[in-house]
Image (tube, rainbow, N blue to C red; front, side, top):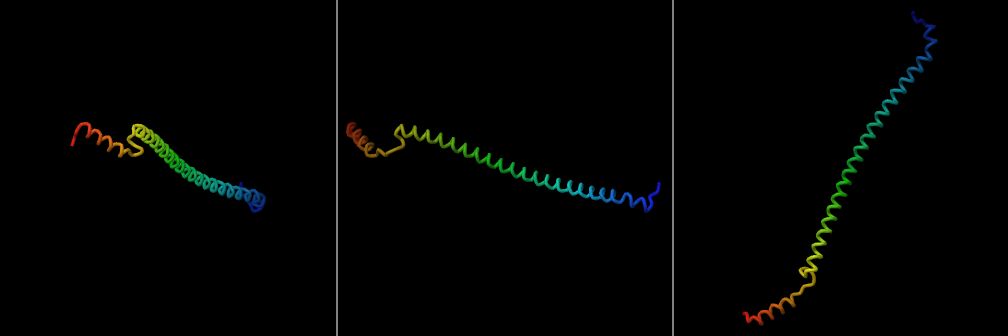
Length: 105
């Protein structure tokens, strides 16, 4: 079967529609691939930001625990009288009394 000039006129519209559909399909694939690449990049960036935020949250949590522990130690030292208002005058008077009672130099 041979195509002649008359046959080409009959399929010209269908051929033109086929070429346009192939072109539109190619553009669709190109833009879809481009959007997919941008979406993956955005996902990677978001994952990095999430990891950074998670690391900061863990660091803050650790620091909070450390502050709680140190404040508990501070309260214990305060209750024992090691930390707080200075009692130098009382200590000096106590030492003076001990020295006098024991007759030390």
